[in-house]
Length: 162
Ligand SMILES: [Zn+2]
Image (cartoon, rainbow, N blue to C red):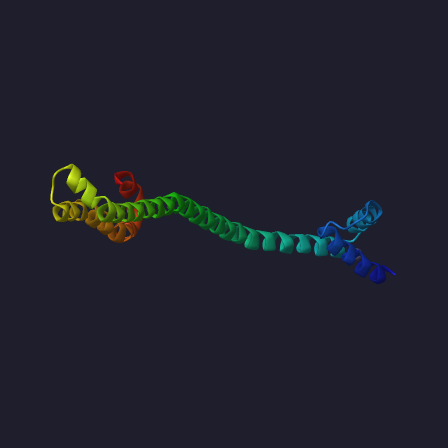
């Protein structure tokens, strides 16, 4: 009779550690543990094992979780910081490209009337527009992405210069 009762009580101990006991099961387990040293020892040992497992695994998991969250937060900050800089690079390149196109069209279509207006030779005016407007903006357009992307680590300083 007594040996038959130990196994169900130890199952109740296991379920109590998982927090699955009804109040009547809890009362009968408590009564049995008061009377039975063997089951009391089983309950104590089980609690110690659970506590040991908790102490062993949860701080490691919390550590790993903290590292993962820190890495994710850092990556998010990097992406957030890089986003406006990349947009600025794209906008600056588009502006440089537009300047090149406008300069080329101006050199082609306004070179002669401008030369007449300023009493200059058309060829010299076109060369001047090419040298002072189209060529610099074309260089700007071509080399700007490389200049901006190379020092990607110190983007804020470069970005404020431009
Ligand atoms: Zn017992």
